[in-house]
Image (tube, rainbow, N blue to C red; front, side, top):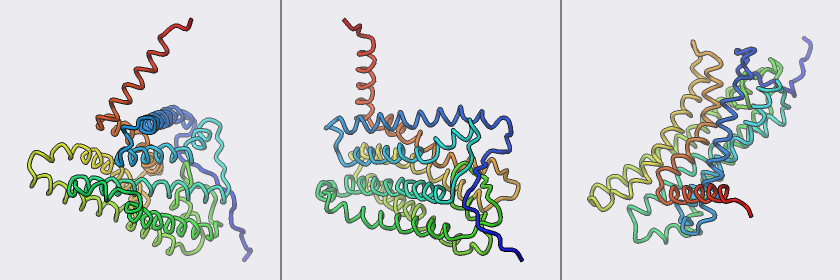
Amino acid sequence: MENVSSHKHFILDGFSELGALRPVLFIPFFIMYIVSLSANSMLLYVVISQRSLHSPMCILMAGMAFVDLSLPLFFVPNMLLSFLFDWRGISLTGCLVQMHFIHFIGTFQSTLLVWMALDRYFAICTPLYYHEHMTLPKFLKFIIPLLFRNVLLVTLFVSLAGTLSFCAGNVMNHCFCEHMALVELACGSTAINNLLGLLTVFLIPVADFIFITASYVVIFSSVFKSGRSGVKALHTCITHIVVMTVGLTLGQVAFLSYRIRNGLPAAIRVFTSTMYLLFPSCFNPIIYGIRTAEIRQHILKTLTCCRFVQTVPHS
């Protein structure tokens, strides 16, 4: 039997079912991209420029804004060019690099929510020792293990995907290099890739979700026992729960769409996976900006100042 060489170049063929209507997708995705860049840049600028916002929680929110700002940069511009000019090609190396950054930054979103839950736990349950717990050396004890876990698992499954032989085909039904979209093109056994992908899901987003849920159960119990004095402190917690619920729901839908395929159109699967990455980048900064009073006031003040400068005539 003649040997077939492994593909080194792939075609990103997401939303090909739309045919001639595919370029129309440029408009909604471009709008979401601009909203993501604008909202996250504004949130970052306000937190960095205002010394009153240099509290641990606001710095964590700025970290989330940085992550939400960075994530779309790795796949949206390429996706928009694909919609407009039908540029669908990507090399295997480019695919693996894109996959690594997308998944690592995606896991970092989940990890930031863990750090925010820790911040709220220390602030509400141990307020007298809050500043002691949130000093950089002590907080690094929580940060470094989670970062190591994320880097290790993401690097493992991306590297393992790079060792596969892709002789079955080179057309990927996606708009960017998603792990399972690439693995399903491989010839030969992919059981280890599937197992490591599942393990990564359970050890990062699922484990983080369990930890965050347990933290908020303890926080809410503490607040209800302390009476009305702690109710104000729940305001930020509710914001985090909203952000976490939206992200987790989209993530689970995207994850299950690749494993439950009966009657599910390919375009729906691609759409959920894309929105899982892009929608939180638009949603998170708006929610944090609206629900966090200090940040909201400074954003409104900044926008008002910009409008005033534009309306003042130059002499």
